Amino acid sequence: MTWYIRNGCGYSKPAPSMRLASRVVLILFSISVVSLVLIGRCGLKLEQELKVESSAAGPMSPDTGNFMYHLSNSEYENDALRKKDDEHKIEIQRLENEIYELKKKLEAYQRLDEDIQPIPVKSVGSHNLLGVEECGEYIEKQISVAELKDGVPLNNEYEVLPFSHFTFSRVYPVDLGLGKRVVEKPIGYRRKDLLEVFVRALEMVNKNRHGKYRYAVEDFVDGAFRNDPITGTQYSLYFKQRNSSRTYRVLTLVRPFAPIQLVSDDSTKTSKQLVNVILPLSGRIDKFRNFMDKFVKVGIKHDRRIFLTVVYFGLDGLAEVQQLLTKISKDTKFRNFRLLTLNDTFSRGKGLHVGAEHWSKSDVILFMCDVDIIFSTKFLERCRLNTAPGKMVYYPIVFSLYNPSIVYSLQGKDLPSESEQLLISRDTGFWRDFGYGMTCQYRSDFLNIKGFDEDIIGWGGEDVMLYRKYVRSKIKVVRSTDPGIFHLWHEKKCDTKTLSVDQQRACLRSRALSEASHAQLGLLAFSDELKHNSDDSQIPIEINSTSGHITQKQS
Image (tube, rainbow, N blue to C red):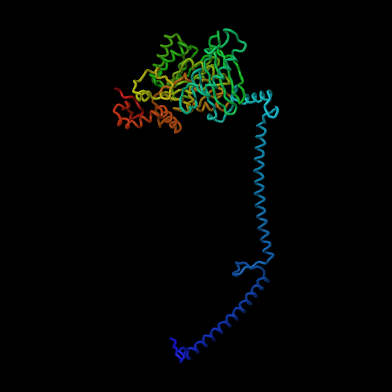
């Protein structure tokens, strides 16, 4: 505590004890300052001595235990040079890699430049236009590149460009447009395109013809077309040869990115071309009877240039098949039958292969068939027209019918006869563009390409393997929608015990697509809502709890 004494003037001044304390504090402060100065100077000299000793002894490593590590100026420079040298090496390596990549790109561009030749141009006035001679050469080159006369080896089945079948009033498109129509009238640009091609073809076949020998509209049978994005649109047109039975004029035309050019004009006679129908079978006797009824009407009574080879697996039902073939042969006086038997597990590929091998006569067209198939005489003619030994095989896109119990029950109609069900519409079926089982090809081509893989057991797979063999060969594959061949709906059993995983997946996919259209399946899915809205909207169908198939309720 500090005491103050007030003087006469009213000011206070410290007591004598306070003055003594202030002096003591001042002395202590002075001593502290002097000590700090001395310690600082001595410490600085010691640090300088350590630096001198360290420089004389050379650089010291931290590993020696000393806590200070210094480098001379020359060593700093050497370290910097080493770092720059490393950086230069890295940069050189990066540039060398970049040069290597640029060389590879340059070589690729040079190869591309060799493959693609510039289109020759001829100067006309102020514009660079193709001259007549150069234009002709360019069109010839486009035609030679296109798959018109000969097949072109492809990598897989996805590269095949399918044809769309057409007549004078109908088009059966393989690629469905906005309307998703499986058959349509040619309208708009499609009508103009086909009409121009037809008129041009008619002019070509009537060249140097006069009077009754000239072709007319009624002589046109049908045709097919496909679009190649590189070379243009390709067309095949068939005309009946006048005054000659079973003879056709076949015109192949192309619309390149230039005027239409005639590629070939051949005459093909089909009157002596025999078609050998090969049918693998195991059981299913009722289906076989139905198949033979259609075979008699189409093949025997109308076409007659046909042969049937049945390859039967097992013994169950074999006697009935023999009796049926014998009876038909006697009734129709038709002898072109052969029955081959195999005591083995059913394999479609093996059956077709055995049927193709058991033929001792001259080369013949093979039609690989199934018991659920119905075909017309027009299909058999297209089978002949679209096959040529060593040059061409025919893979028609079959129209597959939906489950009739769904199709007609949803419309409130009774189930019609089988022949009345053969209608092409989006409500009755679909183009089976994923199926390759039905095919026409010469026996010589089938054997040369080594036929089917006989190791495949059960359902599916063998047809795709054979199709890929042709796709990868130089034989032209004609893939086209065909309104003359139908696949009848039937129950499919995708047995997990006998089928591989891939076969079972393909079987289930085929089964799902074959039941009904998207819209029809939607109506089934929302049938409860329809029943709720109206009692008259009940759908007379039932689902088998065991097989999962849909059938029409019996009234």
